Every structure is written in C-alpha cells, then in structure tokens.
Image (tube, rainbow, N blue to C red; front, side, top):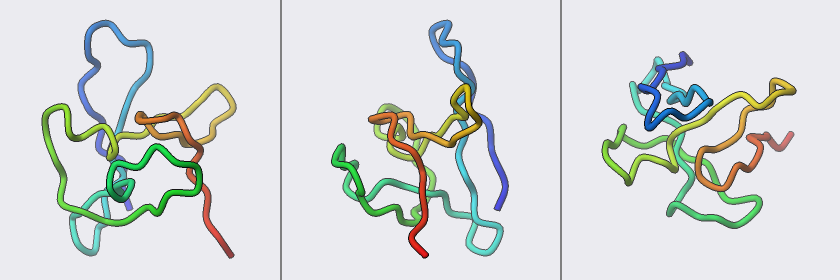
Length: 78
C-alpha cells in the first residue's frame, strides 16, 4: 500500500490522502459512503469530485488514521 496525497482545499489544515493498493491500484473506500461507526472499508476505483470524501484519510494529532468523511478511526479486526 502507498499514500497518495490529495491537494489541500480551501485552506484546510489537514493533509488528506488516498490509501492505494499496490496490487490493484484501487483505494480504501468506506462502503456506501456510510457515516455509521464500524462501517465496512473496501477497495474501490479512485473517485474525484465531492463523491471522493469516503476515500480520503488523514493523520490526526496522535498519528491515528481517520476518514475525511465522519472522522472515524481506521481499525482492523483480528
């Protein structure tokens, strides 16, 4: 996986990025653009425009990866 940074918009203070799969060249995407906690994260072709916010992520002040849409933390089940 690699991070693909998105251009900063309208003076925002966060650096948003896509998380890109090297295997498929697709990005992590919150399924159905859900705003619910514990929503599924899938791989999906990279989108553009306003519909891309469920594919953008940022590091918070503690280094936790959070979604640009809903600000939920990215976690994994073991």
